Length: 459
Image (cartoon, rainbow, N blue to C red; front, side, top):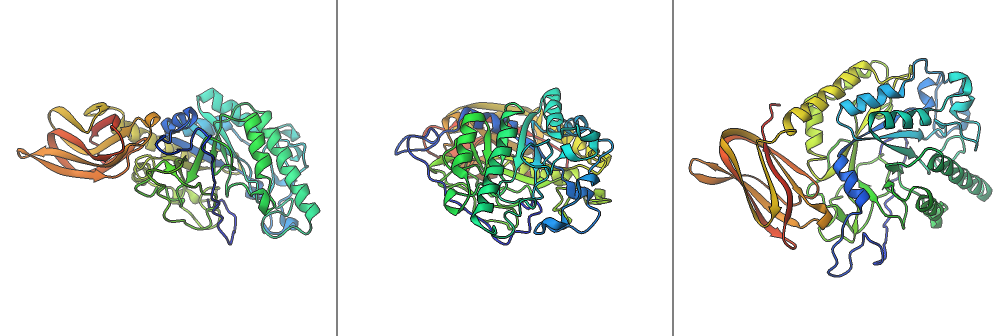
């Protein structure tokens, strides 16, 4: 993702999995999600919260130059309140939240014992504060599943990632520091819902420590969902290739490879494959504020309220992420006072209300196994959305479908598609009808439809 790394390359790593792994298909054995991946898909909406010392820089900063790192004495948010962040996320419909605890600078939001460049050596709360601990407590308070982002590849403090290490000893020292910090956050703050690796994890062959990180996850956070996670772990999810809340379509949860890429460039053709070898669904991250160029929209800019996405734009992103079989991850900006700005809070709440108003109560819904499903709306109603879901515990079986409305005494096609997966939402020109019909025209095995529902929503 474009998390403010001025990267010049995009890394795509092909991940191979053995047939012995639960998520890998072999011959006629279907590829199925883990329980954790099913729970993650049901969550649908999360938030990504960026907060770094760069917000407090009082001189020009360059990620490639350690000498320009903001001084620790600058960091002192006067009103920081993680309860306010997480309540705003919940009001926006989020079920999980991911905190960026170490971004490209190397500054950590917890008092790390690995080096001095952390919140424990700042004036904030007289050096006794721990933003990560506060975040975890707030998530538990508001019923939000907590996750963490830690970039393993870039770190200005260690002069890592932006240019080659000066020698092998520097590379080894950096890798040891990464492992030590990951151990701190993965053992000291409880179970995590999702772990985010922006740009993936560099392989051992390229000088990284992917194997050691994979072992650390299996030992300490085996249940966590892994965004662009390392080789050999389960519960993987992949990037959709852009930071616009727009998943490609069709989007299959199965694929032959998982991406590991930064967001410096948009990647195309990330549809997956209907008979892919691993279960690795998509997650679509994008900021609540439009990309302003300076901080990618994910981090706060003064007067950035004018860049807020409208509620209708957020709804469209919801339909092109969650509605295309991906999870939606919405970036929240936190200001130098330590708060989510009030206009952002209000926009999140308005979006959450809009989603609830349109999709909480269907005009009619049905489910079951088979190839044809009828919806009786019990009278003539305006309809402009249909929602489809497969029982992904049994895999993705649908390969092609069509939805018809009964209009003027005959069935007329109003929408059609290819993949469904966990959820497919389609908007179409409003029709007034009393009946809808879903026909599965092509499938692998008997279709298992968890939900076929009709809605009407004013945009």
